[in-house]
Length: 276
Image (cartoon, rainbow, N blue to C red; front, side):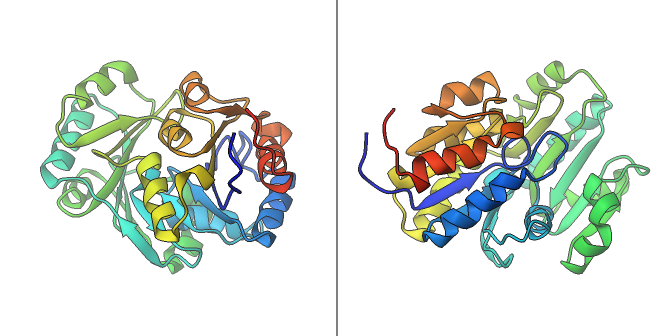
């Protein structure tokens, strides 16, 4: 039990703030606005790149800082950079070659550039928001030549799709020095710079705000959320969360489709409940 008020809320997007179709749950919008009106900072902690998350929030009438790409790329509510972490070049090159050796499709998130290793593939944001994201300075490139070029520069993250068996691919990737391997769903693999995850990103952002971790609430639903659920004073796993997320959290809330985020904000922020 603690008497400290919550001053920072960090929330995952997909499966937490958004439902399983990627749509904003209406009551969550009201909960964010109510917390903001109390002076609480609400930040998005997501595997998505910042501009993608920014537009998702903007479409719901919300403005929040973003810890994007699992904490590798942190920006304020106007997309101004606060912190950036990139992969060692040799580790990035080796990661790409291992992915290609398995015949897997992947997306590479460089600095302000999104690359698909397959020339005819497109990131979902390019198809749904391409023009709007382009106006925010993001470029999309495609194919192996582009992929081998992009890994020579700053790389925040690899995202591997489920077109090949993922368990052996994960094992092979974990042999590469300088990276960390996680997932945001059962059917993907995410590769990060070693030492970078949502927990490290949350600590970095909280320190920037001058907020101690015991005054932070974090909400998430999957394995890549576990580090921030452990790091926060109030780690809250969604009812639809993975076992790893639930084990990392102190508290459990309802399913994302049932407004679990809003219920947790009402319980711990608006009503100030502090009991286990």
